[in-house]
Image 1 (spheres, rainbow over the protein chains, first blue to last red):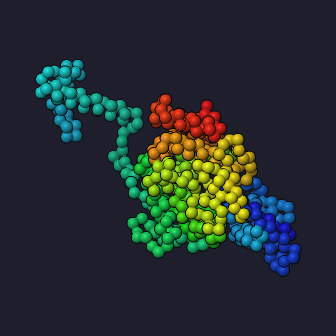
Image 2 (spheres, one colour):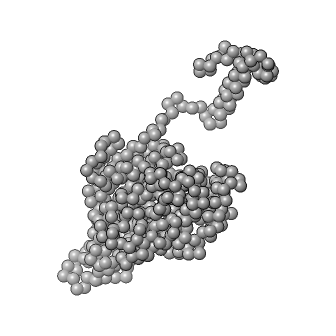
Image 3 (cartoon, rainbow over the protein chains, first blue to last red):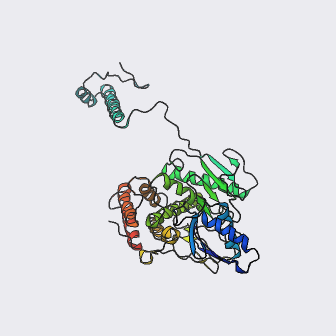
Length: 88
Length: 355
């Protein structure tokens, strides 16, 4: 499973990307479950969000959903944080 | 005989006005003086009555809007629940946490500029309490306005430091509140870039006001002091020279254009609101630079008049905003003045039509 996160907007308007390929990971099962929950709570189109808030695109095996601060679910926040940290 | 709040006219108001007119012109000051006073008093009362019918009678319990801010700082304790734990309120002494103290001071500086320069009481103009949460999330590289309060992250320490460090960032976030309560510019595309630019303009003015700087002395940077030492850059944006704030391996290069020739079309960042804001930002800088002195007195006043004047539409384009600033310069400072000239020329320089 390929999990990609793209973060845009924010006060600085600086984009960040991260990608994790779970196929070689021993904890792949955990990643899959987290990614599925994060995607299920996502939106098909980006929202306007709040001024200076971050926007996120989460793409799992080619399917993209949108979400934005400060209204992330706990699963989305954890997934985004892990992908941007480990897959930067 | 009527009395008017301590002032007792010599002539009762039953004396016909034309008689008072004659008396007022009398050679004898003993006769002319009281007649003049009565006429003046009469005119005042008549105007007052007329205004009362137009704007409504003043209520006896008119709310008194305080000239003091009502600030509260919360500590989110590295979580995402807002607002978090209350750590400093109005009237309490500074604590040990520099972030809390900076946020508190920054809210005060913002309140001061709006009150002293534009006679605006807080962000809604009616003394709205100012709330901010600091230490939001872990290593959070951002600050935002959630529609009700400000939220500040600590930064990751590698690229970004604490978002409460630059006072212009605090002013920027609060100004999103002012915009929300006034023109309410839609946060997308050109109107979104105007929303962003207004936050940068007043954020910078708050810094300049706090430091007592003239347009020439100001650095016109947004977020100076926010980038970690290893980053190649001075700030996040430059109003004086958009596109030059940073150029770094990790952050990339400052993408802001200064003129319409380099306008960026993108779907990201709500249609490039933090990118194309460089164009109106630069126009403001050019006006302030041309007029000199304290930028909040003339350029800032014109921008404020447009933001709060009621004519700026939610979905305004750059040219709509620019046209209104030309009108505001005329109304505020007169036709044919240097202010009008500076405003027209600035928009021309950045390639935004003003009609």
